[in-house]
Length: 299
Image 1 (cartoon, rainbow, N blue to C red):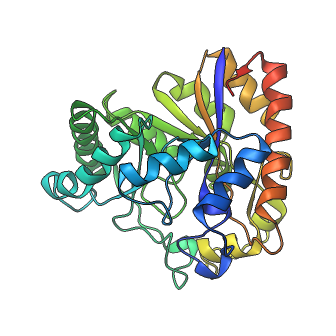
Image 2: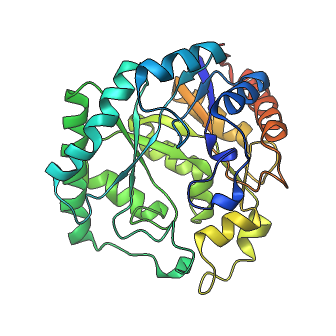
């Protein structure tokens, strides 16, 4: 089985908490990540939006674009509006041969609002989830028809946060919207990562290997503290530096024959957790567990 290892630039530049950003260029971000062993990087705010400009930068760093976040608004919005919003991104991602666009639902989200405690997130009833899931499925099918598949990202602070919400979404959505499984977000939400892989492995097409510090998470006052507060306190980290057993997680993916990207997405304070050092720790741990699980990591 083959796998590829990528990173998210959120370790260097945090879009929601700008103060948790390192003052480095895109080229330096790519250089550090590649020197640690990663061959992919997800899209970030310092990337050029012209493929003719982006491709030479990626090639010079010996890195490929391995995905990127799209802030969807389908829970309350119209399909046509999100189609218009995502089309430029589709064209960019097609031009640089990216594997997918990551769909994150930001309608009704509290993830980027530090004034909103974790406990105040919006919850969809089953009657609300059914049409929403159908709408996202239709959107995913349309994007694939344009030549760029989506992968749905369950995420803290959104309407698909908990394992139960993910299960309900998967029940009422279709194969037209594949799944990005994020170990860290699911663990933060109190979910069982291995059970989620068991239940949804047939639709998982992209993986975020985000680790968590459960001692930080368990001390949160969810009635007062926000998702961004948790990030600032160090809730997330790279594999090998947190609480999750990535040996078991990667082995479970291997058991189901998953082949594709494993992307380290770990937003932290770069002063307390230097991105290059964290990249090196994460890559070393992933190589260890992937070798044990029988993966060949494509370099």
